[in-house]
Image 1 (cartoon, rainbow, N blue to C red):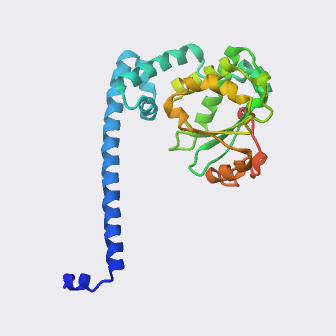
Image 2: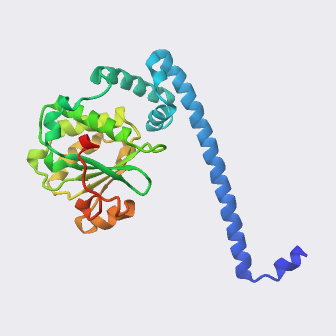
Length: 267
């Protein structure tokens, strides 16, 4: 009976059913692969936790998500990820001895009014806006404290279940007086080595041609994972590009959206 029914089908209908079956099987295979990868990843998280806690007992205070981020940053290589994580714990104790950076420690940086946070993109990631043209070369140690303060703030404001943020790097008005290679490299090192797998996407807008001189000096120090998260946007495609990732109700008003910019210290 089943055979007679199939023989009576139109060729197009039969072809569609075959395609649907192939798609279903393909989806099942993807799900099985993802489950297996998750199991392997979770197993490595457990192994890494045991290793780092043996070397530094304070590691017991961090959750599995943090250990997983360090693992992912090193392509699930337990040895490399453990070394990076142990260096992070040591750095954190030295650089942030009180557990957090006070605004009084970064007053000059905050006065530049260059970093803001408000809204979520379509994936639920917090949106950060940084105005590179407002940055001035200042005391490097204070700038590094400002970077840590900002990243701590951003991470503390992430909704449950989200680990990454989106940053709009706006270079409007950027000139040579804003070029700070030492500062850029210090910020990059903190982001990649101390807050790995936190950046979801960096959208660089209003890019002046002269910025590319500084970019060429910084680019070799950006790791391959971070490079894939960076895009440059032409002015004529600015709003359409932003709207592809961010709903207008969540887009900062400076880009034609509905949300006002909120200074990072006021979030």
